[in-house]
Image (cartoon, rainbow, N blue to C red; front, side):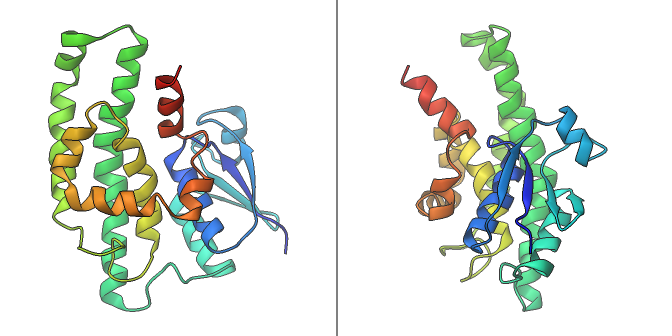
Length: 219
C-alpha cells in the first residue's frame, strides 16, 4: 500500500487534525505543503481548500471525507462503536466546524491578524475586535458546558473529536486574549493542556500559529 500524501499547511488546523490522527494510528505519510487557494490546493480541491489526501490513485478532499477514508482504509479505532458516544463525537465535530472555527478562528483570530497587518493597535484594535470577541467568548462558554471531566472530549476513549478540537484550541489559547478564553472554559483548557503533551501534538507543533507567535515573541 502506498504512503498517503497530505496536501496542506502546517499552520492549518484541519491539516493538523489529519496529521495527528495518522501519527497516532502509526500510518506514515508525506506532507506536501500548500497554502489555501494556492495552485496546488486548487489542483486537488475545486474550492482551493486544504487538506486533501492522495492515496492509491485516489484524491480525497474535505476533512470529513478524509476522516471516513482513514477509518475505512487504515483504522477505525478513532470512531466509537457505541451509538451514544459516536453521536457525541459527531456533535462535537459539527460544533467545531460550524461555530468554533467560524466565529472564534475566522471571525476573531484571523480578523485580529488582518487588523494588526493594517497597523491597528491599542484602543482602536480593541474597539474593532470587541463584537467578535464577545461572540467568540460566548461560543466557547457554550462548548465548555459540553466538556466532560475526563482526559478526552467524548468519554473515556480518544476519538476524532479530540483531533478536530485540539488544533483549534491551540490557536485560541495563544491569542493575546487567552486569559479571557481560559476563564470562559476551564475544563476545555485543562483538557487542552493535557493533550498538548501527546506525541502527535508535539510532532505537529512546528509551523503552527502557536509556534509562530512564540517565535515572534522571542525576537
